[in-house]
Image 1 (cartoon, rainbow, N blue to C red):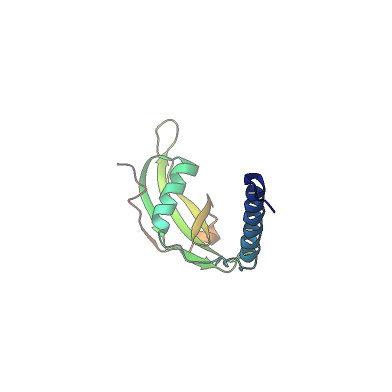
Image 2 (cartoon, rainbow, N blue to C red):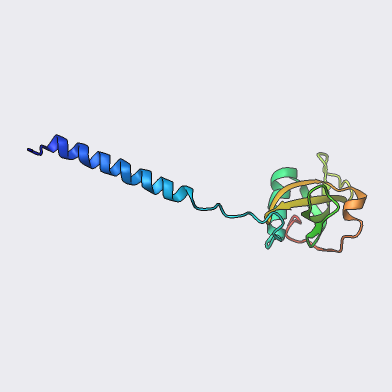
Length: 135
């Protein structure tokens, strides 16, 4: 049998496809890493400040406070929640008064910020949150 360049090239392609198929099959048997839904957020202050600026876009923030995230088991699905409070100006430049928000976390990452209900944040132990205040 005479081996030409074309037959050699075809054999290399078949071998490459076979090896790639084996590699894909081998990877398919690895179990996916389990996501810890309720991992405590480590850098929650930075995450909250960034999300507030992106989602709420407040102007001239003052009197900003934040509470450490706590695992709220009373929710339909337990989640870490951090309460925050700040005063920002409205479109006319007048301060609106302090407003409370709840920041929700999944797997240690912030997912959303919503207007807080009294029940969500009535037990919050607020600390100063200068990272959010306008300078």
